[in-house]
Image (cartoon, rainbow, N blue to C red):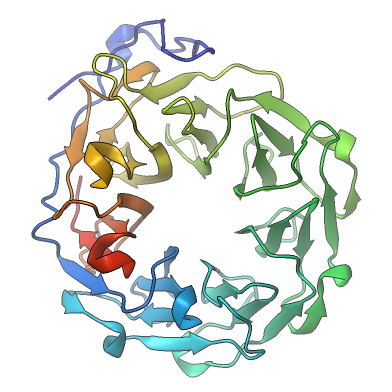
Length: 404
């Protein structure tokens, strides 16, 4: 097994602080699953945009929801999954308002407060919520219109009431709602977060929610261009732009994830920067102006071109964290996924640490989107990896069985 390098120098402008002694930095390389022999494979006929994992049927097993915007639908594959599946095996969730590109974004969480995960689906100018158990509720309980091209969706409790809120990123602002019933307009949002003035292009994806300051209340993280803004919960009403604490991240943030890397129960912040082919890590508690405590990057053998950081996924397996990092345009657009098992510290050299998962075929853009979830039903987290360009850009989702 390879060990993580804790060398203080990195190829990026920022230098992560070496917060752990080298002796504590014994990250290991999980056994890399074979993408040619997945536990299950889902073939999409129209297009693959994004996916989400959660128990939306209420039977205790994780399910897979795939966005299919060219088919104007979200596709629900009820878990546990095995063998090769197609759209004929899915429950299709269509738009009640006939919005174009319905299925561009999908997300899963219990925002209705029923105890079962719900499904959130966006189109070109609308958002709809399907109440779980979704198999018994194919008609949305919430239809939100008046949204100007929703670019990101995150579900998390940022107002402190114990129920996940719905947050939608669009040009100029992030709107949030704790209401999960009826027809809504974006002007009725109970939370309105304004963009800081130094965010030049308006709010662009991605956004994420989680408790990054350790106070027990969810916080909001939004990336745009070279910066990342932190809004600490509880959030209610109009949140002014000057409430943001800013992290400088370099050329641009392409992906943001909040996940527990060290097992302390709080969310650590991971920010992917395609421009630097680097993922930066801020360990909770996070505050504005702080430097990253770790990073993942090509150090020993940087490639000529890469989309490293195209997507990020984190899970806990046993007593350790497992991180999956997408590199969807590596090896002439074939793509690949890096897997590492923590603990992590300092500058992690992905060329010498961890394991690479290679695609089953070339020109597949393997490595985006990425999620973890127990889709095989064995109690262990599985890696869910998309290949957006495979099968003439129709797309394939592979479930690669854990543990890792």
